[in-house]
Length: 97
Length: 148
Figure (cartoon, rainbow over the protein chains, first blue to last red):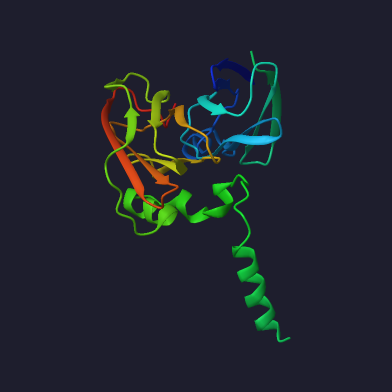
């Protein structure tokens, strides 16, 4: 997971790139394997959820997300967690610049 | 106290609690919405029978998506929001994603999506005012994105 978080005035602008095959049901069928894609992404700053997304098989492979939030500043930690269809979970943190 | 009475009082007590911001996993909250094939059905499964006003939501998409597997979708709005849902009308299922907007947080998102072919993206914003706002963007997809 690549996270970039930058404070711009009151707002923190975030860019997240998650490495994930995001295999749709159709794609999986063709490959003779099981579908697996990210179903939930959450970001927390100072123990508060600041971003939350429930998703489908239609997000791109190695999906990119951009979002903004308020309530944190430079030096604070941003933690991004995702869950996929198979139940795998991965978290990554980055200090806000 | 009879059980029914107890439950009724319990439910009322819960309703008077202040709104605590828990983030929702809409995959679990609205499982049927994710398998709806048609746009109208998907919208209904997420929000019920709503009549959104087409204003207040900025939806930016490329005019021509060269790669149907990586289509950037930008969503921006100043309307205080509870949730923002993204749909399209060409893939096997219509619902793409649902943002659970935390209290006081801005709606300013970019996501990248797959679309099978030329079609439209629809965004519905559920305002904290209880009203619904929408935006639609139609564009061409040069190379379909669900197969690759």
